[in-house]
Image 1 (tube, helix red, strand yellow):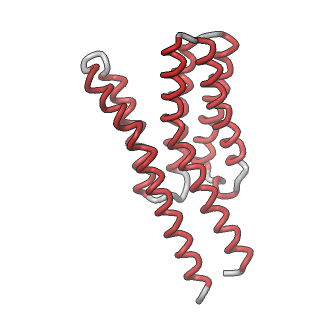
Image 2 (image 1 turned 90 degrees about the horizontal axis):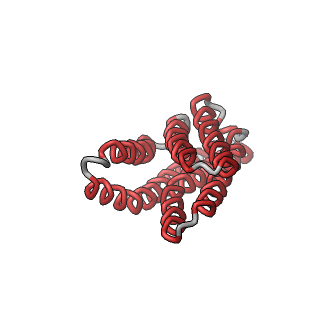
Length: 186
């Protein structure tokens, strides 16, 4: 493998590592913002803070859309969902409508899941992202019947998901890097 291909492959691994970890911390940061804003009774502040978070993710999604590693149609579809979630969040600020934030979060989870299945991440990492959003959706459906249990599951998953994803992403990136550097010696 030539040095140029090695550099490009290393950059692609680093890019996927960064975006996977960033996407896994969004639910935790979002929860912290919601808890702080709702606890103080600031609806408009909540809308603005959620919009800032989702616009940052949209900027990441737009940057990723033009990255060669995400040329797969599945990955680009997921990135479009992520960008759409940010646009809906921005419109919620203009319309002062909290229901649009819920729709934005649904699109974010869907976009993240679609995106990771369109990238060359490991199967374990893809499943980690997918299981989290399926679990959140299941908790949302079961919330009226099992309020205490669903809140407990969400609280635990908010902590476990970013840690597990960060660990799995770092392990995957390290393995990929060493696989690439071992092939250059031959």
